[in-house]
Image (cartoon, rainbow, N blue to C red):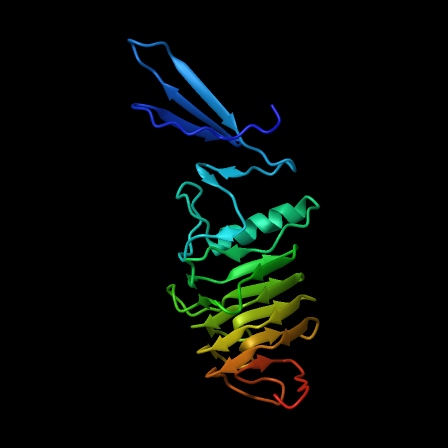
Length: 239
């Protein structure tokens, strides 16, 4: 009925299966009656709230870059995917946020953001670090293709991008980046890259943010170690 919630059992010799959002627990026993419990957990919008034994959420609860429906934690990659699924069915979900104990996210590869917009928000006073120094190869953090990414209160570090890519964020094909109160530090990019890279058809708006100790190869006035292929407008005395 409406408003049903998952039921968790801790029983000996129980076999669990998951199919189409339904969790089935079965305990065969020669001395006891056979029983089966089926739990279905769906949001009102029809998107499953549960992947395996993990409740889906927009709150990041692990620093690790994992996608595992049975580990009981939510990674940044999983939270972004969930937010996009909600947008795909016409909803306007809240921002992806971070549990209080999360100070760093260790990305092992870039997160691709396509088709549906993504909003990621952290408290600027507590600032969450997105560290791209993990993984087998150098890479950036977020790659935006044809949609809008809004980030606030994040620090991007450890990026090591190829050409042309942003060592923190890449925006292409008419995508948009809106950044507020972010820090970009300790990133490196190849020729035509930058900490943030935007192609000719995309737009950037970065406000009240800080760039420090980033490096890149500059081949013309538009491409540098900080922001590539963009026009920089300095407003006020702070620069």
